[in-house]
Structure formats: C-alpha cells, structure tokens
Length: 239
Image (cartoon, rainbow, N blue to C red; front, side):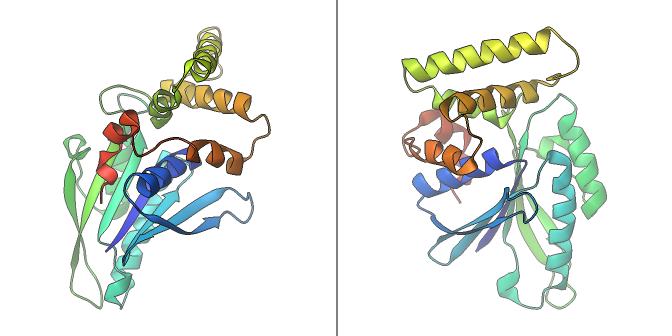
C-alpha cells in the first residue's frame, strides 16, 4: 500500500512524520530537498511493505497543482506497484471561506466535485489509467483545527506547552504577536498567520539560528506516543 500526504509547509511535514514514527511505528526512509532553497520538500516512511510519502507543497494553493501531477502520474503508469492507494491532504483552517476556495481550485485541476461537507470525511477518487484498469483511491481532506479558524501550528502550541517554562515562552510569544497584529494593518492579518508567527517566535527563542534540523531535534524530543493533544488531532494518521 502506498499513501501520499500533501501538506502546506515544513512544520506540518515534521509533525506528520513524528506522529507516524513515534505513535504508529513507521520508519524513516529518506528525504528530498529543494535544490535551490535547501528547504525540506518530502520525506518517505516505510512500515513492512507499505510506503508513505509526505510532501510539503509550500502553500495551500500549490496542493491542487500537485494533485493534478499525481493524477497524470496515475493515468500514465504501466506498473501496478507504482499506483497510489490513498491520498491525505492536510490543510490549515485559514478563513471561513478558505476551504471552499481550495475545493474550487482542486475541482478545477482534477475534474472532481468535492464539496465542503467532504472535508474531514473519507471519500473515493476515481482515476482512469491508460494502460491498467481504472483505479479508485481513498482520499481524505483533513482540515485542522476542525471547529475554528486557525493554523495547524495552534495545535502544536498546545502540544509544546509541557511545563511552566515552555508555557511562559508560549504565552509571551502569543502576547507579543497578537499585540503586533492588532496595532497595525499591514502584517499578520489572517488568524492562521498569527498562529504561525507565534510558533516561529517560540522557536526563535529556543534556537535563535533558523535551522530546520534544530527545529526537528526539538520536536523529536517530545513524547509523541503519549501526547493527548497530538493523538486526538492526528488520529487520522493511523493508516
């Protein structure tokens, strides 16, 4: 079985990786970086004969294009072992209308008719293949947080709040960023961007030099298997 997971950014990718590794027993099997920016683009995990590719797409509106490329790959493959069995798309809940705008774009790119009620529900996606029989994939569009506008990073903040010191850093970071967002109208005008800025401020205090391997080291140190916040929000990764 092969699963593709598309997410918006590198932090999302790392969260998904560690939940799969330390909660569900997957094993790291390689990575791909952007040759121009050296930013992490994809990680591959394996468990027995199953494979998961997690790909950072660099923003929500880049995901439909990657889905179109995946559709073309499936349509043109001549080997069954190259087919994908499941696709998971992980989105921030940026604004009240962001889900609808995303669905409009993805429907345009791959010729589907997904509706807002299809979000957070396992659905089927039929793709014709020019050489093999037509295939039907599982597709799961997951929006976090589910019930409120915000970013996936807001869930990470809850998970990182493990003791009084971490709690104080998070609270101070939140107060600073939220004050800046309220006192001007040029930056941080989306709630999801506020959450991302709070997380990045927290990490800037933990590690002033911006290095994703250091961020990964910090994240890796947490007890992912027993963290209730992450387990509740990422139970859909039990694949």
